[in-house]
Length: 416
Image (cartoon, rainbow, N blue to C red):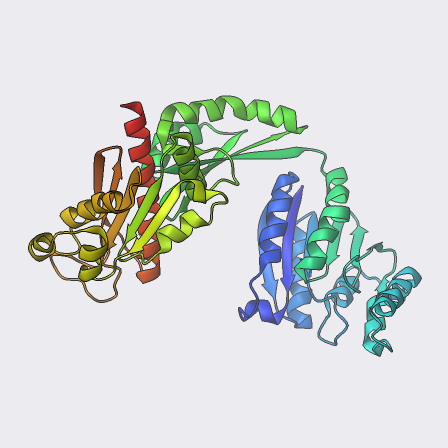
């Protein structure tokens, strides 16, 4: 069964509001086994909204509209959808009572007249109670086509979908889709895709999709079956094969786990403490680690050594090193990491120094050149990186690479 999303609101088109509803609904549709091929965002314009609804109903079985159910004149989703279905609007007594109760509970006095507009619903529609607002959800069915209308505020849409719409759609689509996410680091998207090209070419059910993230590659394995257990059974041999092919590049198979989560867990497992030393990343690396609950067990200290003086004073980088090789160099990164261990007594350290741009680069040392060093159990690993993108992208890429190098150092020294 195919589904389609229509997000209604000029504020979405102008970028004044981030469309989190579409991302949420897309994930939910996928988990329900619905095939989602199109998403549309349309402003508060009756002609364009009418055209979008008609087109969606022509090519999809279920159309989910969000937004445009409010009390103002430009809230037209319900009116336009009813028109497309050939339905008149009629007063729904239950909704009217709920609107009255909503305002009574808040003691706001007289109810604005335009709020009663929300008690008018397309005849024959299934009305879905809104526990967090005044606009009810609506389900219209006709000739094998379904339109589901949801309020725009996420604090209304999300609970309504989970409580009422999800069970409704599950009954219409009993087949289940289950996905597992395999997260990789230390490998590029092209190489990862080449390593599983034969699996992708032969895939039918389950399927594998690759997604490039900053400094990571994610592989989503998806299976369709009559129930969750059957879907997981279908995925089992594929997941096993991915473990064989990617080995230690896999840092988790839990979608909720981030790279910093995995690194922090590895530090705990190996009973190691870590210190960070940052130049071009300016504390972003420490910030990623501090995002992890309980990281205080393993994270000892973070230095931001942006200037050469700070590198010398805080972590003992030699003046001769900076003069001969420069702040952005293999030697400086190495001394930053080793110095951090000496200064703090931590078991491991990771250092980052580079040119984030847009200025400061040269032919010899261009913007995007970053050196990362990880010192773990007496071993030091140094990586020269060449990142592209703007300043923000280069700094984020540097952090991901630093976490990856630290993880590699922990794994390799644990084995040896």
